[in-house]
Length: 331
Image (cartoon, rainbow, N blue to C red; front, side):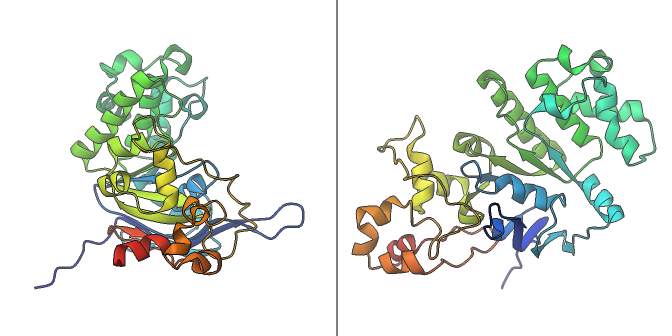
């Protein structure tokens, strides 16, 4: 008997986002053929260096940046880009930004900040009760005590909870959290991550968490997608990817963590300009495996330099876009 895999909540297929090049260069391929699925109730961490395209991908999934090619689907329905369709979509998919201070209007009280989404979308019902429930769910209790406070009267952790509460009032199915704890003190980060996990358990929320912090991914995610120069190069279950990474890029990212038990891998140079993506594997100009001769001994050095690994599928199975890693898997 065969079983059909559940339909993803959110899917990207062949997603390309480009920006005009600078100084006479070609277009910058910020997102370059991404396939990604997020299941119902699943937390996916999207990790990679700054500038790899993570935030652009997140904003494209939200409909804030239309793709040059490819598609985004929610519950099997392609995303439409009319103002009316996007407004309806954003009731179901909400963005949580990195800096709560920048997300909150300093002239608005906590109550007005949380109620803003209800007013924009014209939601009927008891506004006060909905705002109070959202604040309470985010650990700001009793909620009435926070109604008339302003952002400058709150701690960083409390401000981030207000931002999350503002997303929750519309009862979304998916949160897209872009570096949700990067601006917080270490002592507060764990509390906010625990909140996101509790909301998933209580409300069935899904989440895409964009981060450069692999430790955060370990603590919160079910699955990890590693992004480099506009493309996902490794994906799989969080334990599988973070304890047994297969792509040299993932290995390098993990090697510099304080708890790593291997020598740090210092990658050569900076990532290439996305308007000048190298031929072959886009990582090969910085790859420690190619530089060490290990790829040559495996017989794939030429492929690394000339053949672009195939784009990874969007499903939940472990995958890697690396000629060398694939030879090791079949050895």
